[in-house]
Length: 292
Ligand code: GUN
Image (cartoon, rainbow, N blue to C red; front, side, top):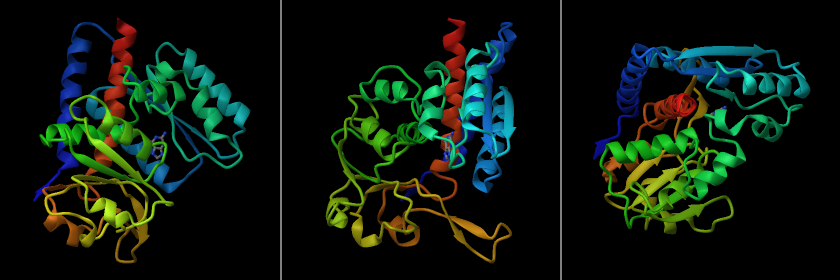
């Protein structure tokens, strides 16, 4: 069993990006610039955004964090997005989700210029990805594809089973895995809350992507010998023994599933660090598209 080290892979990629940015700057070009909008004080979102700012530093990017109280109106937020859309010094930006209930997330997502949508959430980018056109791919699925590629995992002709059909992981990873590409070329089955007998399907899987947000859902008896298991779950489970008061728990019963796997990602330290890395890759791509 090989443990897929997302933290190391993400660091390797960030160092590659940093080297490319150093070259750009040496040629007299401006470094990439990522902006992030954070509304309110959600603990998870604060951590994600702080990590994004840290990753920008490591890659040599300029970063701007725009913070707003959760009393900001939808109209005010849309005006901020307009401002970033037309700010030539900003290559890409993200609006950290979730947003307060009085703000329509879909409206916000669609207000972002697709050419600056480095999260890859805008329907234009989602649509382009689904038909294999160049676009900003959403960060988590793109990070998973990078892990499969860098660990030399054969995907062609394999049966990949995706657990979960969310717009930010399940649907796009299913799309990428079935794409005529390498990695890709999988036969994909997507399971969700209305799927009967999920275990019967996962037992036939060569590759399982667990992205349903249900702690330790995937059990030993649901996995065949030699499977590749990618755990996208990051549920905060209360844990009084931790300083933070919680521990991040994946969708896989790691202790019992891992011995059966050829490859498996841990939680934390698997898919998580790769997500931010993909955001950095998209921001670099946004910068380069502008230079052309
Ligand atoms: N909230 C949880 N994950 C993400 C992400 O990848 N991007 C944004 N904008 N918000 C998130």
